[in-house]
Length: 113
Image (cartoon, rainbow, N blue to C red; front, side, top):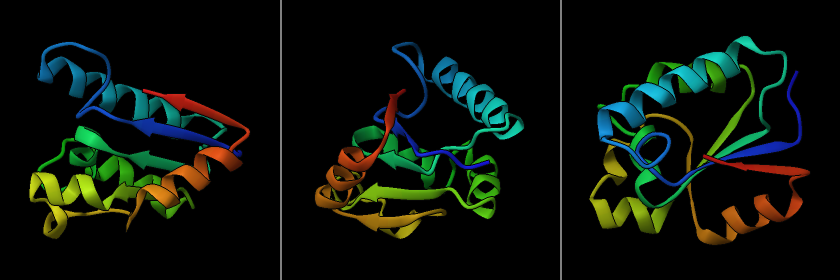
């Protein structure tokens, strides 16, 4: 079941730890989310979080599975351009800060990871 909550990724993984640990935690979190009965309505990515939805990310397959189940993804265009990743996006749509703001304002709950 899809709920009206939003996940917000601002890092290339979870938490403030070495990159490998951050990404391991992101894999675990997204795997458990897929196994749960409640999927988010949307997942937002900005700053370094956009890297999770781009080529080479260890969570691409998990994100694609979520997308197939109806979860929407929005990636910050400014952030993608800053990191030179716009042509490496593998899931979701490229949006602006206005799209991110609107999603955050309409969400019943936001979980920042």
